[in-house]
Image 1 (cartoon, rainbow, N blue to C red):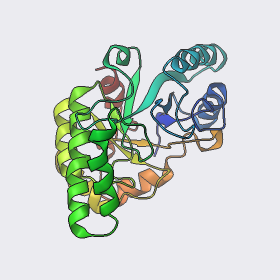
Image 2 (cartoon, helix red, strand yellow; image 1 turned 180 degrees about the horizontal axis):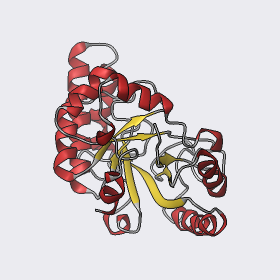
Image 3 (tube, rainbow, N blue to C red; image 1 turned 120 degrees about the horizontal axis):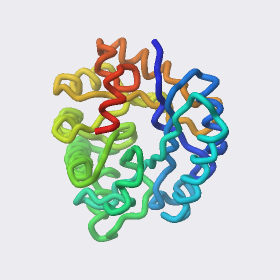
Image 4 (spheres, one colour; image 1 turned 90 degrees about the vertical axis):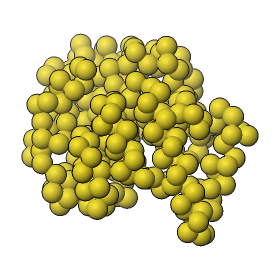
Length: 253
């Protein structure tokens, strides 16, 4: 299967090891036509995310330089933002979101919340989800509500690795994504997704994007694991945006 884009790659600006230029050259070697530089937002703890929002200006400058040096590859300015509040607030403010070619959001464990008081019930539920069924159900509802709110509140293109480490209701999130025109990611870097998970989401008509989640240049465009899973789940290539030509039109919208 020929992919024309990998929309989920990281660089040394967050917790990757390569530069923007390294990733662009890696995409060129893979034969990709598009790559997105989607470093983590500033709410990630322990140096995982960018230092602050101003760092994105440096990333954008490096992207412009990569465009000049690497032929045949469109380098997109993107970010993987974090959900930081129960109302769907993310760590990239609304006025800034329009400057990005693509905005990805993810639900991550180690992030700085907007309000510690509001975050404590979520944290407690996810801790209890590890030890009892009732806790898992409560965590699933709360996590799903946060992601659904974030999809509706923000200009989101892709929800990254839904369900990774934190339980969610696949179908409810997929329904929200259909309404907002948001894609759900099939992540090739994390192996948490199952065929049943994808089938439940696909029943809603949601579209998917397979992402490498590359944190080093050699993994840019490595989408085989995601494609194998999509094929096992019975997905049609037309349902996968970075395979199908409709993906270009979707991104522009």
